[in-house]
Amino acid sequence: MKIAIIGATGKAGKLIMEEALQRGLDVTAIVRNKSKLSNSKVKVIEKDLFDLKKEDLKDFDTVVSAFGAWEEKELPKHAEVMNHLCDILADTNIRLMVVGGAASLYVNKEHTMILIDSPDFPKDWINLAKNSNKAFEILKSKKNVLWTYVSPSADFQADGKKTGEYNIGDKDELCVNSKGESMISYADYAIGFVDEIINKKYLNKRITFVSK
Image 1 (cartoon, helix red, strand yellow):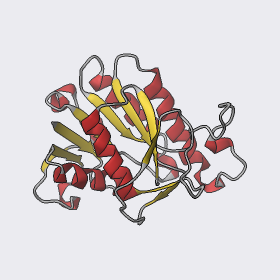
Image 2: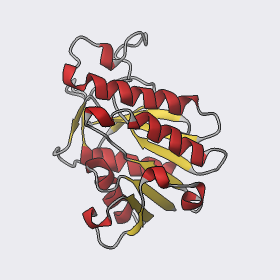
Image 3: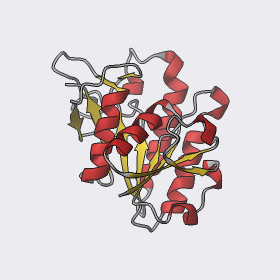
């Protein structure tokens, strides 16, 4: 199985790359600067993602987008990246798997409120969340793209422990664990992400991971 990972130098992309390599997948990192890669043995395409064309991705089974922008002026790129990747993967059998956000998950069974609209949502993250949600809406609208969008829990812990255990939610709802917490470590998220790359269970769906 041939996998391309866009954003393999970021926190999530790096861990997904390492997990995929450990599983024996054929991994290529797509990065702007290969000197920032943590693994010198991984195959590399050194290219800005906006310069990617169909030809660059035609031999892959799955393309992972771990793109993330955090500065205010860069936030619109979430939608731009989604449109670009959908355009070059349209009408192919190449699966687009997206490292997504949690803000668009429903927080009630009636599906009348999403996380970003809940009273306790951090104000500092609202603009990022709005742009992430917009990108998800773009992805959902594409009928000629094979995709899976993978949301973390509300508390996405970069330095959290790797337990190797997680639960999957597939109802577009924010999930909680046995302690009533909505959290997942980046390490366990990466495990779940690669599991889904291999299993191909949730096609044209959004899933989310939560710690056990």
